[in-house]
Image 1 (cartoon, rainbow over the protein chains, first blue to last red):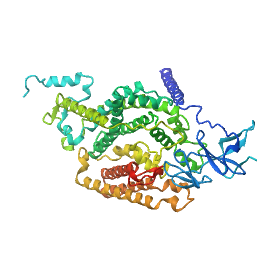
Image 2: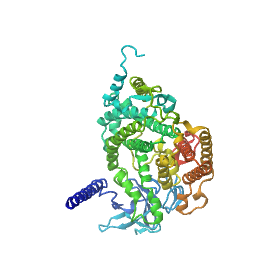
Image 3: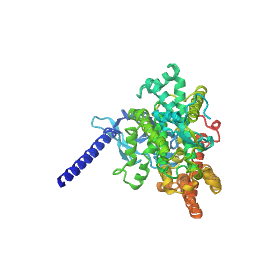
Image 4: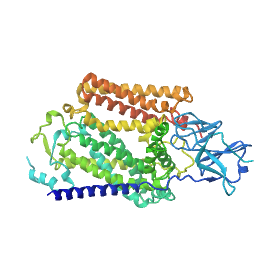
Length: 146
Length: 454
């Protein structure tokens, strides 16, 4: 009798554990391993970017700014709900819910919860100028091209 | 009494009980349940609309391809090349919108007639789950045409799912605990809406959600019978006798058939006169301006335009918690089956509606004319932006007033009436503002004609 109840309990425990493991492995499938990997963006020749201008790189959803000193890059994705920003006269504007940022990417008005992210611009080993969307830097940091 | 040719009582009972599809009905129904002004047949209309969705959906599924490259063109083909495709797609679209409207009407009917009372709490909860699944089905279908409307609505929707980051960022714990990112990844399978999102939404839309809905609908209908038929006022509660009960066959069957025909005719008529929208193909770098979600989410989008987390997650979740908890907090069975719970209830409902109207409109006037916290105090902490806005203020006021009425009347039903009425009125106003009074950059305009040309 004692042995029987032990075996019964053991079987129940085994089924429960198996069930939990199976459920976790099954649910794990819904989360892709490769998602949102942030790849570095090659800018090409910095001289090709117009001076004192924010250039929109549509494929990478970035604004690249170049002046006589150097070059820097800012995310063009609104921190509120992910719409693509438009360049206004002295900053950036979101068409979706009207968030406004200044030229340094700081939130001025609207529901945006965070300032825009500036990304590190550097020279890669092969000599190309690249933007790294995985690394945020202060708005003041520039890659000195000359 | 029985005229020649009509089946006798035994046969009438037999027709219902022997048939697999009919036996979901009781063999006899109470005369109160047959009153058209009591239920308005809303639940069964939803069932019929679901049938329309399934039948039209299967045809659309045959011609549609869920791929980023070809989805848009396949929908164009359905509209322009497949014979009758345009009508089928229109029917699918308008029946789905019909389901949204009717599911809310059904919720409203069941609430105001106190039909969650008695032993019906579980069925109320199943009903709320069905409401959520109806909204999710609609939303998941919205992405499939892969046009501009679809792409930006889902971009916004998926970022609302991620908006818990607003809170975790403020707490500085996003790197360790990121429920927002988790939810977003589960929903769209990545950081931005792309092929993984389309595949996921397709699977949700054609298999997971309809199947879940079908199963829950079965339980929902079955529970009505288990719980003693449709709800009715206390004075009929013990009515077991023959006087007030009709045989389901054939009266109820004819009524249902007529309703089915009516539903199909109305959907078909709307589908013939109005085309489902299809904008240009999705362009991931150029949002529509204004980028609006489907109309039934525009109330939430209006709230989201103050704070993504408060308006898109916190307040809607609180609202759902409220809906789920109604039958467990309010157990005053004497109000079952009676519209607005009598005279006191009617007064409270009307006053609540007026109060909610004033509270919401005043806040909207302030925010539209004078701006909000960030316009008055530039550089104010995000905590204030998130915690003090029309979404949270409105919800807070409603809870306080409901508690006050609870204390004053000593009745949970009256408190529930206040909270339900207020939240419904607020939902309607925010939705109306989102639909008709918001233009480019989500600014306020009296009419579309005033929108600037971009």
